[in-house]
Image 1 (tube, helix red, strand yellow):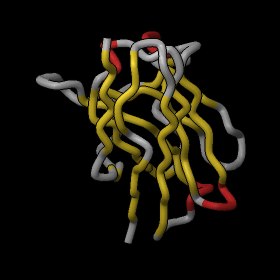
Image 2 (cartoon, one colour):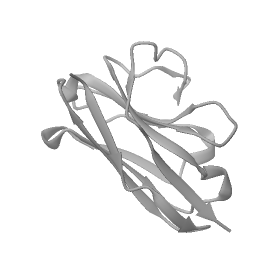
Image 3 (cartoon, one colour):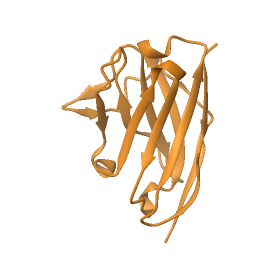
Image 4 (cartoon, one colour):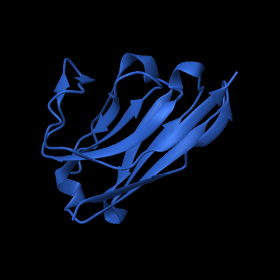
Length: 131
């Protein structure tokens, strides 16, 4: 049974930092594309960043977080991370960890929210940025 459990959300001031973690279990972690999605209030869920399987550790980001967020993974511990720096109000959202077997859905070096029909998500963790 695939299980994803996020942690590390909370409140931070604008310009501050948070680090999210996702503990994965029930599947061969190193064979799965891993991703962070987010859903701001009243908006659709969108992919934020993805990191490739097979030990390649290739990562891709949407434009709005590039240079501020870093996705990483520890295959030995089946754990995914998202380091978020220089937070702003647009980062207010529920953040979800996601997993899908195989290569990451990417077009022109940008992650895409579609093509995740076979994906699995965690229950999410709230990130609140105060101005």
